[in-house]
Each structure stands twice: as C-alpha cells, then as structure tokens.
Amino acid sequence: MGARVMVVWCPDWPVVAALWEAGMPAESARRVPAAVLERGRIGAASAAARETGVRRGMRKRDAQAGCPDLRLLDAAPDRDARAFEPVLAAVEELRPGVAPLRPGLLALRSPSVFYGGDVHAGAVVAEQVVAAGAWDCRVGVADDLFTAEQAARNAAPQETEVVDPGGSAAYLAGLPVEVVDTQPDAGDLVSVLRRLGLRTLGDLAALPAEAVGSRFGAYGAWLHRAVSGTGSGVGHLGARTPPPELAREQVFEPAVDNVEVLSFSIRRTADAFVAGLAHHGLAATEVRVEVETEGAPGVTVGRDWLHPRVFGAADLVDRLAWQLSGSTRSPASRGGAPAPGERAATQVGAPVTLVRFVPVVAVGESTHAEGLWGGSTDERVARGLAKVQGLLGHEAVVQPVLQGGRGPADRQALVPYGERPVALRDRALPWPGRLPDPQPARVLAEPWPASVATDDGRPVVVDDRGAMSGVPGRFRTSTDEPWQPVAAWAGPWPVEESWWEEGGGCRLTRFQVVGVDGRAWLLALAGTAWWTEAGYD
Image 1: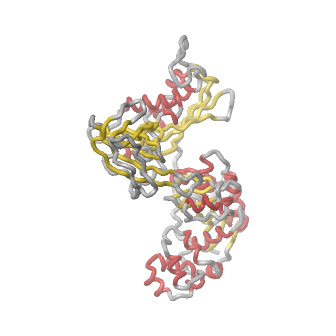
Image 2: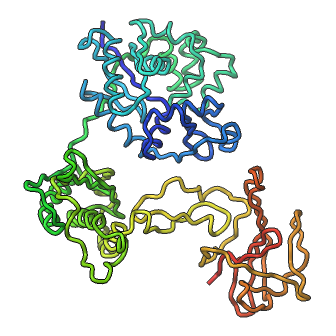
Image 3: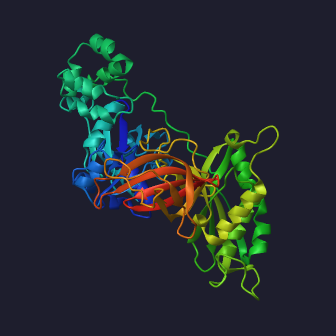
C-alpha cells in the first residue's frame, strides 16, 4: 500500500482562536454562542451558535435576531494563524513535513506504519492536538488530499474516518456538491452546479472530463479528477520548514532583584535576540517579555509589547525595565510621578531568575526599513509613549485612526499606540447620509447643548419627512454662549441608523452653520434637541 494522506481539521477555528485570545478555553466554543464577523456577514460560527440557526454567510442582524445572546468577534487572519502555530508544532513532534493548508486545517503523510494502522495513527495525532489545546479535532485518511479532507469533516470529534485504499470515488459519490464550498477557489461553482441539476459529487463525476474542463476551466477539471478517484494522490503537500527558534532567554544565578542590574545584564541577550531575527531577514514589531521569579519557579509572568516600527536591543531593555518598574510602584503613585518623598522603584517584588524575549509578530526587515534620508518616526517620542504605556497600561495611550462612518465621531477609532488597527469600518463604502467634504477639524468628545431659531425666535425643528419648520436665523453653540446671527447654512443631512433595534436606534439631522464671526460649526438635531458636534477651525 502506497503513501496515504492524513488531514487534521479543527472546526470553527476562527471562533476558537478569538475565544482563546479572550482568555476562554477551546472547548468553550461548544457552549458559547459566538461567531466571527467578516464584512457584515458571519464568517464562522461556534457549535452552540449553529444550534440556534446561525449559519456561515448570514447577515449580522439576521444572526442576532435568531440568537440574541450571540457573541460577535472580529475577524483577524493573523490571530488565527498565530493561534494555530502550537497545533502545527505539536503534530511536527510526531512526524516532520506537516503542511498547513489554512488556519484550522493541516495535512501530512499518514504515519500509519509507525502506529499499526491509520486508525491508531489518527488517535495518536488527535491526542497530540488535544494536548496542544484544540479540543475539537477530526482526522481523515485517504489516498488523496481532497478525499482526506472530506473524511475529516465527516469524522466525529477526536475520531478518525478512514477511506479504504482505492475507495475515494465511491466515498465521495454520495456527498452533496455543497462540500465544494469549503475549498478556497470554489467561488460560485456550487450555485452553477445546482442550476445544472447536479446534486452530488457522483453526478459531477459522471460527466465527461472534457466537458467539465471546457465549462469550468482548470479548477473544474481538477475537481472532476478528484471526485472521480483519479486525483494526484499524495503528491507534494507543500510541507513547511519548521520555524527557527527565535526566542532568547537568560538565566540569573543567583537571582537578581535590582532593575538597573537586570537592565545592564540583559543587554547581550537583547543584542543576540535582534541579531537572530536579522539573520533570517526578520524584525520584530511585537515582543513578549517573560519574567520568572524565584518565588514562583516554572511560572512566568509576561507582557506583550508593540513598537510602531521595529524593536532594537535598547528598546527591549527599556521594555523590561518599564515592565518591572511599573509592577513595583506603590498603589498611591502607580501610573504617575512618584509620590512626595518616594523614589522611583529599583527593586523588584521578587528576585528574578530568568528573562525571556519571544517574538510575537516578526516581519521582513524591508517592511520597516528606513528611507534614504532616515525614518519619519521620532524615536524619542516613540520611546516616551511606550514608557507611559508601561506605567499606565497598554490601553492608556491611544491614537486616532480614520475609519468609515457617517458622523465625525463615528469616523474616529482610538487604537492603542503602536498597535495595528483591525476591524475598522470600510471607508470605501458609500455611507448614505455622510457629511460632504471638507470634514470638521475639531470633533468634540462630548457634544455641547445648542440652540437654533428663526429670526422671530421660533425653534427650528425637522419633521419625519425632513421638512424644516423655518429658516435658521440665529444660533448659539452652547448654553453659555450668546446668540449670534446665521451668515450661511447648509443641510439638512438626515441619518437614521439601526431603526430595527429595540429603542428605535438613532435618528439625527445635521446642519453646517456659519456665524457672522466667520466660524463654522456642525450642529445636529435629535428630536427637538440641538447639539454641537464639531467645529471647522
């Protein structure tokens, strides 16, 4: 019997990875109704969510209507791949040559000869995957990759489904054509096949190969060969090269309890960490600094640090010092300057026995290489902000990022400094009701209560049809400001959002108003109340 393909599938991996990141165990996907949202639609759903009717491709509001307790998570492909890395490493311990097909799905040549058959080999691999933290895993074994993947998808949790040698065509014949939707290049092929009256893969296999190739192209021809049992077999799985060991650590014997001594002693290890990355053409933009103390042997306390560009040795030493110093400040002065009579802390809470630098995100050096005349980032500013983050917390220093939205406040997203923004609203969407350019330069954190009236003093309001009760003649931007005449105005721009939600959602009407003093303002009317949202400084 020739080589066979084993496929390991971890269902709903984007949901599992997102829950992992939120500090929840992998098995929580069975009982927590959760889903990953991709461009307003469900990209993946947990087993608990599917029990309530949530399906892939559903719109957000339809999914929430069927499952009010649904926990929506943002899509993050980098997070999914990073969370799958321990699973790949665990399987590689059993057999080198693992091919990661995509996060949650891997393939390898079946190690049946070492474990007494495909079923026993699948059990050993499943046990290894579960030990790596992926509770729900399914294993399939067949002559070719496509059939092995379908077998894995039909297997029970932590079980192995084996397709007999030479039995791929018979196994696939009864499967519905919808299983093709799991393939990355499927596109709208399933819809076309159903319109042609093809309901199962056996129906597709019965068609002439030439006709399928001419109608569906290279992908259709490949699929026809796969479902006919004449695929390429094991072939080249594109097995990855195991990643190099990029982490660096230093053991302190005896333990050290002084921050300054630690910072001085760790410099050579920091240099080696940066040099090791550079040897592979990489640079770290996110690093985890782990510290093991004498009082808790074998237990490390770590923190992830981000850099707006890339980490150098001095940056790593600084982060270690700030991490240790920030954890030893007294409650009265933590997060700010030392209290009167208090000196900056130099002693750590417990003697340190080990420090480890682990790259969390490493990119090609050319990605963040400086230009010919130097970089645009002021390193002193970056280090100063990172130090503030070390004292106050990662979320305490944020920077505004532009995203899609209708109002000026909606278009702002606050992202922790140095972190790459994810799950932003698409700026390219039309956003009906969005303000025309130019956009206001100053957006108020809290809108001011305002007033708008006609020349004879009657309040200006807008009815449900968008009709105004009068022409704006005078206004004031807050209750503390005097009234002033209106020199020019534009609008209204009505916006009605989330009207289907309980409470009626949000209904606003916006106006641009210019006073006789030359200053322009953005005013919003909600019901009968006027608010000042922003200013055109």
